[in-house]
Amino acid sequence: MVSLEDLQKVFRGEIKISEPLSHHTWIKVGGPADYYLKPSDREDIINIVRFFDECEFPYLIIGRGSNLLVHDDGFRGAIISLEDVLSNIRIEDDTVVVDAGVWISTFVDFCIKHGYAGTEMLAGIPGTIGGAVSMNAGAYGGEISDYVVEVEILRDARVVKVQKEDAGFSYRKSGFKNDVVLSARFRFPQKDKEDLMRVRRELLIKRNEAQPVNFPNTGSIFKNPGGHFAAKMIESCGLKGKRIGGAMISDLHANFIVNVENATAKDVFELMVMMRNEVFKRFGIPLENEVQLVGFSPIETNLLTKLPSEINE
Picture (tube, rainbow, N blue to C red):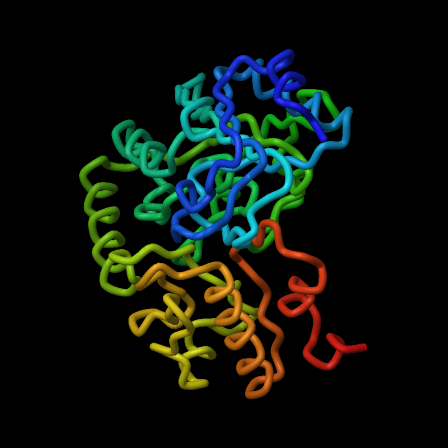
């Protein structure tokens, strides 16, 4: 176990002990982390990650916690929040360089202001650029990787730059699972600013009409399997509005679970298992998580990663 004194020797930022992660996740559930760290700057991030790697202490990098489901027992290790650090965005030559802690909404606004097309699809998506790049976020047929030039990461205690062709991007995935994204460089086509603002408004209206934005949630629970929409499959199983405890499968969008009344992670997790099992029974397709599970045991995660027939083997 790493002591508070150990941390204070290598870390200059803010340290909170036993911090409830329900305060830092979009769905407002989750138990405490042993340590919750808010780095003071880029050097602080690099130093603490290297320290944790050297002593093999568990840690997790988060932005705004928009796609996290944290166990009710919390996380045994350290949470490193980038939300208030790595917040620079700038134009270099014909590219846009964005730090990992920049909010997606800020990124979209900046690009539209400068007439760069391509980010409008991200309008209304919560989170930070680091998370968006790591999971290759996207919507309406586009992905953030469409415009990536290179990504700067911390890998094996070294800061390296990875070109797009080496980044391992695919649907809602990248090759950065075990890395810390520090920044990303993008290249966009130029378009009329008024047209870009109009498209953003239209997509925001569409998103707000189709998704339960008025309730705490984690965004899409499951990825769309090839040739199918997870929401339509879940809805076909008659699960819209199904409730366990304080969590409910949205009656507006079936691939969202909302926190309607002091939900627990257990409530949300049980609904996820139900959704996956019912879809598999009806369609024979195992849904894959888009939401990231934090602090769950292998036995629990097996319920959402293995086929139902394999779970008790």
